[in-house]
Length: 168
Image (cartoon, rainbow, N blue to C red):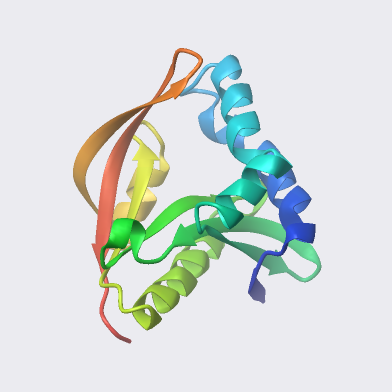
């Protein structure tokens, strides 16, 4: 049984640990080790996670199986004053991929988005990430591309993907 709950400040090291375990297997064939290290520090230091929550309005969810934390997601409803909920991050431990954990996290975010009156889920995903197929399988469609300069000479080259949602 997968339990999904809202992460609290005490959970930030868990999120950081899952990120460290998932990013290298996920991105080792797409990004340089230097870029992975840079992005992990930029997005997953405890300070950065705290700022994302306090200053940017992100909410982190943790997925737990038994007593094991196996994945996380972060989202923001009413993204840029729109009727979109933005999924900023979603990662599941490589050893638990394929068990429906990512799908459950997205379903929870979809429920929250509907409660907030939002009609679209949106996310960015690296154009070379295998997760693109997963998102398409669960109803997301590519609506554009975006190149984001993240500093230090690094660029994120993403697809923008949306999924229309309706009340359950």
